[in-house]
Image (tube, rainbow, N blue to C red; front, side, top):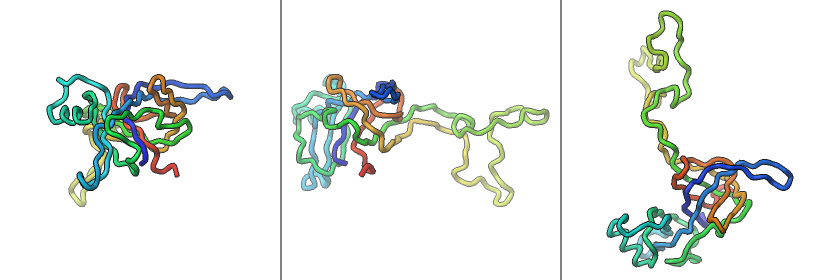
Length: 210
């Protein structure tokens, strides 16, 4: 990984190529992300870049975080994330990382948190079929079917059952940057990315593009 940025998913739209082809894109409001800290192997045990996103007031951050922001000379940020980049020599504490770091046609990886659905049944969570609705089967038709056996008399792990659905960290790889809008701090990325509108995502250069 050579570069990364924090952003907010705005939503999906579509753009047209000069040939008239429709391309579905996701709009990400990315940055500007001030560099809050540059960690080194000598001092911290590993090399990493800490970026902030979404400026806020001092009342909305705790004292340790506020101390970091004041030391870096940047305003308090709602979001703080670390990125272990291959080369940190081009970054400087207090400077902003913007969408200009990315180019049109470049491949990126997007990490986000999927929409949470709470406790869900097997039809919604695992796309299972309903039970038979004929006479003698019921009274519940959306419950789990048979998932056990006589020998051994236990239920195996990883069986599809009701439970928590969604709100998971998901990475989508090798997505194409269709357009970089510097004036609006926006990246237009081809296809869908994880998470609902307004959720925080991270965009980095793809690890499998080469």
